[in-house]
Picture 1 (cartoon, rainbow, N blue to C red):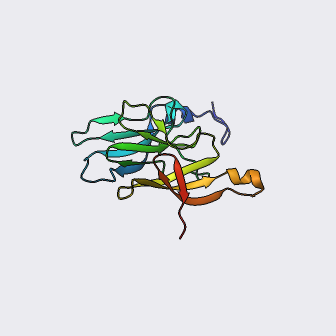
Picture 2 (picture 1 turned 45 degrees about the horizontal axis):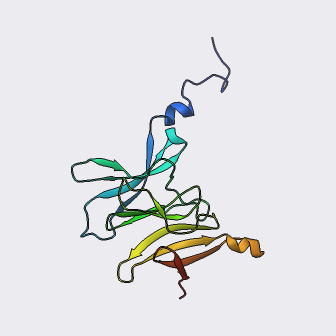
Picture 3 (picture 1 turned 90 degrees about the horizontal axis):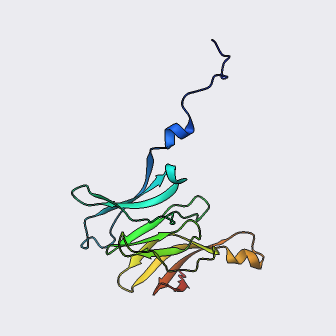
Length: 171
């Protein structure tokens, strides 16, 4: 039976193309090169609704998944996201998709700990750890200013000390 141009049912569906695959994203190494030789990356797990999962591999090729169920290591800074995680001395720091808070995870088996508020008022991306001062520097997108009449969120570079105290870096 012949079908008209563009009217046939294709056996190739979006589900078939994505149900068993992963898409590799950001690649990272530890910010302290003397600390470990692991390589880190995040994957999009399509079979889990597009959840972003941080993984690592050692020299032998053994892959370890860090991001536990209920977490999704994905930022929405500038709407499109990116810069979802970084690593320093074996500790993974990531933005969680549901609340856009910055989290710290000390091992693959450890529960992630929120470092910033979880109200979705602020989003974090492209972080790095400053070992000299023990601070995290990060892009912060502040949506709280919209409540005060601003038309758009405010983008800033912030220093985060001791997990909570934040200071806008001025130049």
